[in-house]
Amino acid sequence: MEHAKHVYCVFDTAHGFCAIAWNAAGITRFQLPSQHADQTERNLLRRTPGAVPGSPPDWVNEIVARAKRYFGGESIDFSDVPVDLGELNELSRRIYTTLRSFQWGTTTTYGALAKELGIEDWEGARDVGQAMGKNQVPLIIPCHRVLAAGNKIGGFSAPGGVETKARMLELEGVALGPPPPEIGRAHV
Image 1 (tube, helix red, strand yellow):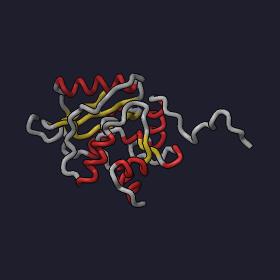
Image 2 (tube, rainbow, N blue to C red):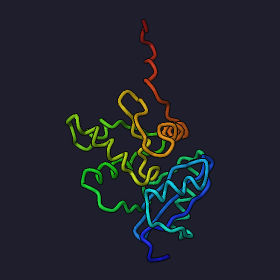
Image 3 (cartoon, helix red, strand yellow):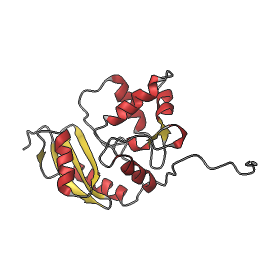
């Protein structure tokens, strides 16, 4: 088992069953909550063929404990978690690195993240969206914190889709929809 590229375990949280896979270099996959452990395991194995179940080493147990606390409503930082995402293009690497600095309850938009990376053309937001859709470790790389223009939820390719994204944002105290009107302004 120690020679396997990916080892994984399924664990229970306040929001359902999650799964995590790892290798010697870092976390390789994180599966967001599903209602049933077997469903979570199937979702992980579909995306990580050849992974084998195993007992997590202490460093992975610490990440599992953080994930449980996160889904229990505690503000948790995952920016120091080692990840091994395999071969990435330079743009995806830059997007993920920048996004890891967005903490609990902080959001951005696809377009704003593209601009922060110096991508000013109209395709930048699309490139960010594509990178979010390929994110192998949601929560650790917090793609749920990237919204569409106008503070709208946008897409989410993880199991549960935008409902999962909305639950995670709600857990972090993020209100979705248009910003509230400014106080003191006349509204007609």
